[in-house]
Amino acid sequence: MLASTVGPRLRRARAAVFAVFALNGFLLALWVVHIPVITDRTGVAKSTLGTFILMLAGAGIVGMRIAGPLADRFGSRTLVGAAAAITSLTVLGPGLATGPVALAIGLACFGFGNGALDVSMNTQAVHVERAYGRPIMSAFHALFSGGGFLGSVLGAAAQRADWDVRLTLGLAAVVCLGLTAALLPLLLRDTRAVAEAVQVDEVSEPTAPRMSRRTRKVLALGLIAFVLLLCEGAAADWSALQVREHLDADEATAALAFAAFSFTMTAGRFATDRIAGVFGRVAVVRYGSLICAFGLGLIIVSPWAATTLFGWALCGIGLSGGIPQIFTAAGNLGSRTAATDMSRVFGLGYLGLLAGPAVIGWLTALVPLTTALAAPLLLLLLCAWQAGVVAPPRDRVTA
Image (tube, rainbow, N blue to C red; front, side):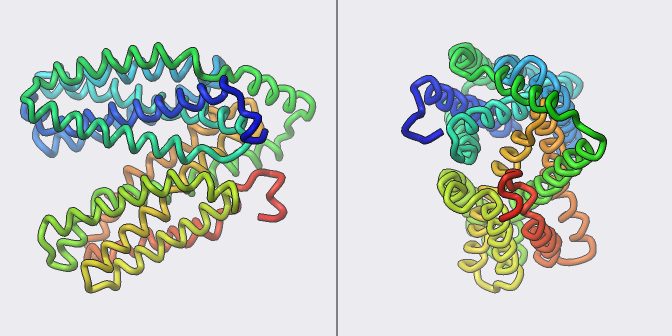
């Protein structure tokens, strides 16, 4: 479908999915900026908080795995509404907690809702992108970052105004529930897409080798997502410390490392759709991985702050477009279980986001932090080599 033939119904659906992505980022940021207040309120030690955050992540993976089959059965629009409502309500849980047990339960519920929303909103985004007939997935992910920025700013403003955390999160829950109710009728019904996939499967009965090929592709996409999100997690948690330790920089200069990374990550996502439309998904993943690898190489060898910050900025540019292309590929495998496939890719990718900081931390017991960054650099080279897995089937020969 050409951009000029896109009707108002589809444009409204696109705007609604933009808003859902922003809502998700907004709610996550509100939790993050209130972590110090909530830990003081509940009396939770930092070590215990780390365990609870892992619990949140684990509950998110459970939510992803459950939401996939449900979205395939009932449609992603229904699941987006349910998951967004759950996430909006459960963001209040950590704010209401007065002790460790209540906080653990609240975070598990919030993580579950967020994981389910991740899968369902990306599945809906794939349907909208397919109807548009051109790449638009990266812009959705950019709006997630934009929602996170808005949530962090408003959360900080509420704390500066000395608002009670329960009031802030309660208002956020009410507003986001109302927004969810308003957005739900604008989203696309994907029953037609599911029916088309079922017809394809019925016309050509899947044999065991065919199913095995699809399973292998899901695994390959998941492994690339694992590597890219591992690198993203490593950058988020270790970039500032790397600058401070390697260059003996002050804290303000060190903080610029993550600022450079996050700025170019967000800006890159706004630009990626046009790049993917011209050069294709494979090029975005392949050359993005190489750009990030080059950035890490620059960081490893650079003795100067300016060059090191430029390296972290390159990492943000390189990583900005890869994950949206992988999720698009996972949602377009041409089967009746598109959302389930996406949930599996999501799960592996999410494990990478969690594993990245941990892997770098383990390596620092053996080598300096800057040297430890060689591990994700090598993994990125493997990603670039295997980038052809994101190509649509019709492009596989030329990829």
